[in-house]
Image (cartoon, rainbow, N blue to C red; front, side):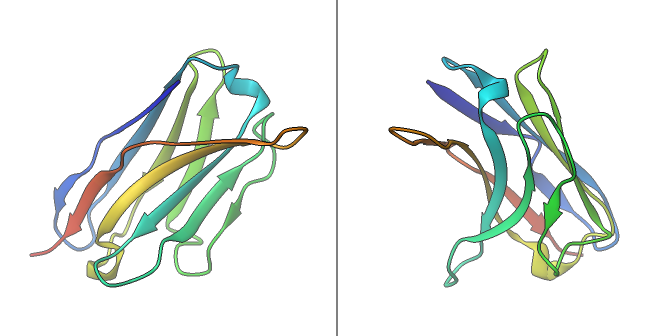
Length: 118
């Protein structure tokens, strides 16, 4: 099982990045995908979630209107489009895959660094 995030980097305030989460080793469309982030000295927080069928996503208040989560089940990949980035968006971004059930399954990626700075 692998979740590999990519697309992070250094960007100026107001800029954009698109993160990808490429999945292998399990049936992607059976899993809910959530992007999390963790800034230095802070707890990991949920940023955005997409359902298994790519239905209506949910967002943290801090990113709503600026970030957009999507998924391509044919490519087993989830995305996080981040626009109007702010310095407070600086964090390591992780993707998590969860499948409710018995037993529930949860997998994490290794994270990708996003730094917003001028």
